[in-house]
Image (cartoon, rainbow, N blue to C red; front, side, top):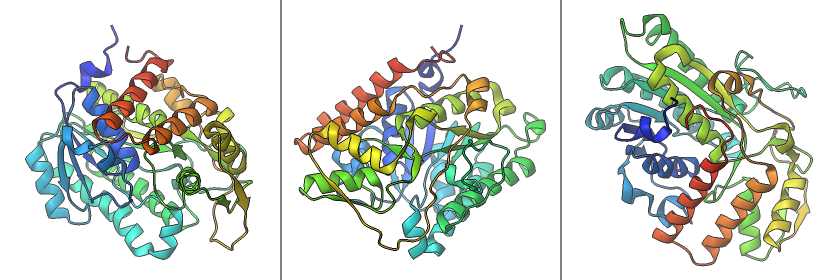
Amino acid sequence: MPQSLSDIYAGKHVFLTGHTGFKGCWLSLWLRELGAKVTGYALAPDTNPAFFDAARIAGGMSHIVGNVNVPNSLSEAMQNAQPDMVIHMAAQALVQPSYIDPLDTYMTNVMGTVHLLEAVRACASVRTCLVVTSDKCYENREWPYGYRETDAMGGYDPYSSSKGCAELVTQSWLRSFFHPDEYGKSHRVALASARAGNVIGGGDWAEARIVPDIVRAISKDQPVVLRNPSAVRPWQHVLEPLSGYLHLTAKLYTDGAHHSGGWNFGPNDTTMIPVEELVQMVIATWGQGSYEIQSDGHAHEANLLKLDISKSNALLGWHPALTAKVAIEDTVNWYKTYYGGCTGDDLENFSLDQIRAYARRMPYAQYA
């Protein structure tokens, strides 16, 4: 019989980097819901408001403030945690800031990955390691079909390039130190990487992301400014790729190195919509708001990038579960709940309710 995710994660020690970030907060909650013992290692939240503080994420886990660019501290924290599973999400995660500070972007996204993988090598308890990168790791030619896991790494801007580099680092460590053919002989670590598209969901207040920009504008009764309204993005609710990460990590744990390598977790084509249409849908769902279009000479951003998810579909049984409409509704409802005065335990429980509702929608039965 298929195991449930709870069967696999309950009681497991999970070392999660980047747990104070938008996606990291959601994954922390979901892992706790599954019964995992979570140790988070990350910088303090860098936005105000911050999901991590508003929902008191630290209350149900071991919370360590640390920098992946300090290898001794990272390795010590992992040794102390003695994790079964490692999920690496710490990153400089935005395109525009990568133009302002490319050095920090490369240090965090490339050398931070090196430091993480070296800490894994030194920690005998680790059985699985998942490195989370981005759909922007691919050399984007803006063609109309999705990129496959075997396509070339690349990147126009420093952020995208750094994510391509992080993938190359992961591939090198996979071949050099965690080769699948040597699993159970010279090592016992199943290593994989995961690539996802543009995620939306409650709790994101990052600068220069469209949904947080809309939320800030609505909260201040101001129009949201669109720089590139015709750009098409692979929008997906944050719980979509996180479900893929959880399923892949579970398969790495139960099946070993058979699932090592790179994996895409993107949306269906029906959620590939232009930025302007997304803004219109968010405003309509919220019931208020406006926008204006400005061409302000911002640095290059891709117009089209999509992922081919046939590998995850065929070999993991993973599929996206939400339409764009439902993803936007869940996102807007989270923010309206927050701005309605819900914080602390109530916001944590509201977020957990969204996770439980998503789990009931998952159309695949790899894990019942």
